[in-house]
Image 1 (cartoon, rainbow, N blue to C red):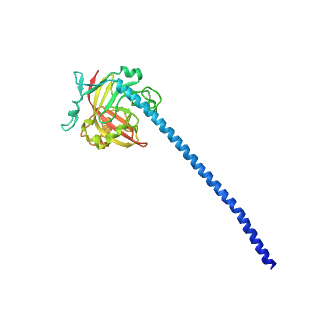
Image 2: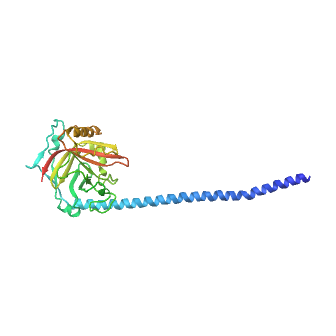
Image 3: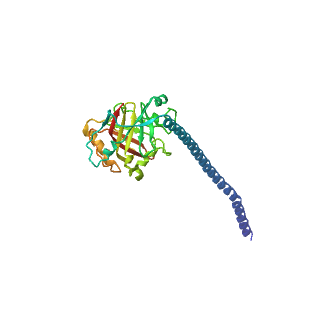
Length: 296
C-alpha cells in the first residue's frame, strides 16, 4: 500500500515538473519566433527604403536628363540641307533592288555647334535615328567611362549621355565608328533603340538611315544590321590591318543581323555602330554604312 502511494506521489511530482517546464519552452519558442519575425521585418524595411531611395534617385536623374534634352533641342537649330556641289555620294556597287538608291536622295542635317560648345566643349556631333527618340548632340572624352554617369553639362547623372568611342577620329571617320549611350527605360538616351528589333520599326524602310552632323562634315548612313546579343566586345573594333580583316569583320556583322536589309558591304565602306544595353546581360546593336557626305 505504501509502495503504491510512493509511486503515485512520484508520478504526480514528474507531471508537475513537466507542467512547470512547458510554459518556459513555449516562451523560448515564442521569443525566437519574434526575433526571426523582427529580422524579416527589418530586412524588408531596409530593402524597401533602398528601393525608394533608388527610385527617387532614378527619377531625379531622369528629370535632369529631360531638362538637358529640352535645352539642347529647343535652343539648337538642326536644319535639313539639300545636296550641293560639296556633296559626295559614296559609290558602293549597290544592286538595283538595294534601297541605297532611295536613301542617297534623302537630305542631310546641318548643326551649328558654337552654342553647344559653350555648354560642353567636348561636343563633337549630332545624331538622328529615324523611327526613334534619338536626336541628340554627342560628345567624346579621353575614356569611355566619364559619360556613363555624367550628363551633357558634365554634372553627375547616372543616366549619362551619348558619346563617341575615345579611340575614334571625328575629323576623319575610322573604318568603324562607335557611339554609345544607356538604354534608359524612359526611352531617353538610347532607350528607344530597342525599337529597331520590332516589326513596327523594321516594316518602315524610311527608318533605315542615320544622320550625323559634325563640325567637319554632314553624313548619311544606311543601316545594314541590327541584333540583340549577350554582352561582348567583338563588334567594337575600330581599325583593321588590311581589307581582308575588315571584310571578315563586316561580314560577321552582316550575317549576325536579325533582319535582312537587302544590302552589301565592301572593303571601301565605313561603318557606324550604335551600342546600348537591352538588359543587364544583353546589348542592342545597330550597324550602318556611309553612303553620303558633305564637307563643311
